[in-house]
Image (cartoon, rainbow, N blue to C red):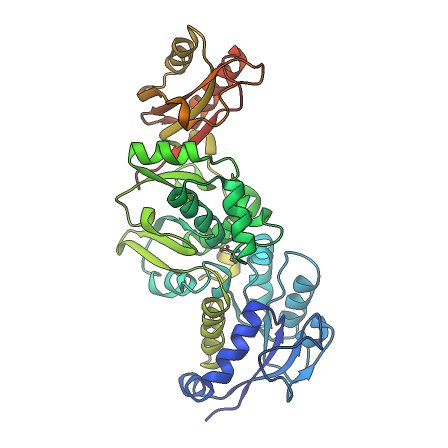
Length: 439
Ligand code: HSE
C-alpha cells in the first residue's frame, strides 16, 4: 500500500466530529477504497479540553489553525471552521501556498473568494475540494464536475437549505405561523440560535453561487445573487398556494440566458405534482438541466454530521487516490467573467397577496392598475375573513385579503403595478409577491 495520507483537521463541531467517527468506525474499508491508509495526525479546535465522543489521545493538538494548515507533517488540510473571512480564509490560503491539499465545507468562503482560491490551488499544484459545501450529503459537486462534463448546462436549481424547508413543511402541515415553527426548529436544534443566514436565504445563495460556477464555468459572484428569505411567508400564503395547486419552497435558481446569468433565491410556488414540491423536512434537492443528458435531479439529506462527513470523506478519498481536479471543473484561468442578466426581465407567473381596505372601488382600482401595466390576471379573489388573522387595518378600518394570480408577465411590470397600488392607498401593508415556477 502507498504512504499514509496525513490529515490536519481544523474544527471539531458537528461535521468534524462526524468525520472522526466515520474514520474510526470504518478505518479498514476506507483505507482499502483509498488504496492507502488515511490518518488524522493533528487537530485544531476552539477548546482543547471539551469532552468529545471520539478518542483523540494519539492526535497532536495545534492551537492555531493557520499553523496547522502549514504543518510539515500534514498532506491535507480539512477546514471545518466556517466563515467567509478571518481564520478560515487565512488558514486555507496558507495551506494552499504551502502546497497542501484542502478539503472544505465552507460555502461562504468559496462563494466570496472561490475563483481566487481555485487559482491559488492550481498555482501550487494542490486540490481544493468542497463537496460538503453544497447540499450536505448530496454528491452534487461530483455529479457536475465529473459526471456531466459532456453537457452544456442551461439551468441548475434546487432546495438548498434544510432549515427553511423544514419550517415551510411544518407551517404547511400544522397550519402554524413562521415565528412559531422557527422557535420549535431552534429548540430541536434544526435552526441556529441566529437563524438569519438560513431563513434570510443567504446560506442558499452561497450554495447557489458555487453551483453556478460549476455549471456555467464562470467566476463565483455571490454579490450578483438576488436574495429573498422566507420570513414574510404567512399561513394565508400557504393556504392560498394549496388552493391554487402549488406548494411554497425556498428555491435557489441559476439560469444561463442570452443576456447573461441569472441567480436568484426566493420563496417559489411549485406545482404540487412535481418531485421538488414533495421534498419535505430537512431534505435538499438539486436539479440540473443538461443538453445531452436531459434533466437530472438529486434528493437527499442537506445537513447534519453524518451526511456532511460523508461528503468530506469522498473528497479526502479522491485526494488519496491521486486525483486533482480543477476546483470548478475547469482551470481557474478559463473561468469566464460573470455577466449578470437583468433580474427584472425574469418572466413567469406571479402570486400576489394584498391586504386591502374594504371599501367600494378598491378591488376595481387594483384590477385596473394591473391592466394598465399590461398584466393579465389568471384569477383574482377576495379571501374569506377567517384566513386573515388581523381584520382591522392600520387605520382601524376593515380590511380584506385579495389574492391575485397573474399569467406570464415580467418582474418589472409586476413591481411597477404593485408600487402604483401602494401609492393609491388601497393597501394596508406591503404587498406579498411570490414567483410561480412551472419547472
Ligand atoms: N444550515 C444549513 C441548512 C446546513 O439548514 O441546510 C449547512 O449548510
